[in-house]
Image 1: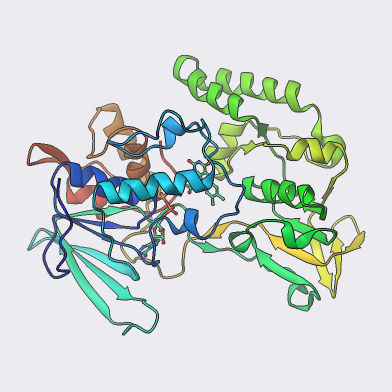
Image 2: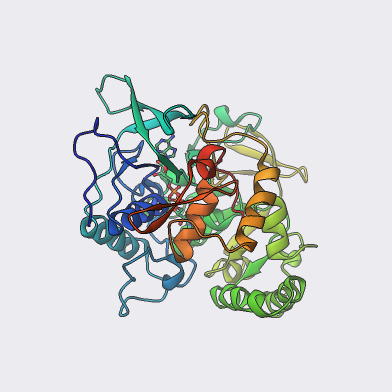
Length: 402
Ligand SMILES: Cc1cc2nc3c(=O)[nH]c(=O)nc-3n(C[C@H](O)[C@H](O)[C@H](O)COP(=O)(O)OP(=O)(O)OC[C@H]3O[C@@H](n4cnc5c(N)ncnc54)[C@H](O)[C@@H]3O)c2cc1C
């Protein structure tokens, strides 16, 4: 097993950008193959999304075997859907086992491929608190971009938001509903985070409302698992249709409660708009029982009064913006170029040709999503197949391809 270079000036074979689960999976796989690498992470810990920016009651939505990293399964005796605390513990074990030693507080600002030397030049700013802020240069033959689908909290423009008299927080700051008991809380955003935060608030005795603007495809965890199996054996639209029927039978007509009925299925919506199906863990029951009130889009805010698109207004003490994340401004020149469509087409061809990149299993797909947008020449390194620089050369951190 290989330990990453301790001396930062020592040249690595591979630079991995991003120390989330995908980045540490890449590091683990490289380590297992004794390929020297350097992992650059802009936060001061690995998997900050899981360790810092998610709520307490979070559990992984997919069965554990689909979320485990290469070469180290999640223990058999752990629950099928481990809570965040166990998942973080698993990541911690992984990092220790493979002696993954990220260079923290390094925000990659650009990456370019130098044809003459056949190496990537990666510029990363030292963003350590009290640090120099200097830009350092790293170099390697291969580049893996594992910067995730989203990064910084997205705060929508809402007329009068700054005038709101109560507390406004983003879902990435929300931990649990303890402090909100008996408070009137409005959750803006009805993705998985928003729905689960609304459930958490209602369970803690908050007077909870949630804004749902667009159609939602609810699924249970089991439906999601079955759908993944079905698409392997049935044409896509059949698998989707069956999932929609199951959803309708299980959840009933949620439009009665103010949630627009979906015209399109969960996977079509994911592919077309990047919208994940909603894995319900109890929110629907609370909406049906009236413990969570569903409201239409917000029009404006005046003091504590929020005006909605149906012309009605309600007062709130707290607003939780579960409005998602956005790719950081100016992040990683060379890491997010355009022409994604071309890359997608080319990558599909590559997948059809069954060319494989360096990692295996689910994580391989994640890293493919993160780093590959065009087929690369396969190169041999110490017996392992490694992506050619071309693979990462015009990569981007966009939506999943596979
Ligand atoms: C609330 C919530 C719940 C979720 N639940 C699940 C779930 O149940 N199951 C599931 O499979 N997925 C879930 N996800 C999706 C989640 O995105 C993945 O589980 C996983 O975190 C993705 O890993 P990643 O490494 O690709 O991206 P991330 O975890 O986003 O990691 C990307 C890393 O790159 C770093 N980075 C970004 N830009 C730079 C830069 N320029 N320089 C250096 N470093 C950089 C970031 O700091 C971060 O550490 C959830 C997400 C959220 C927000």
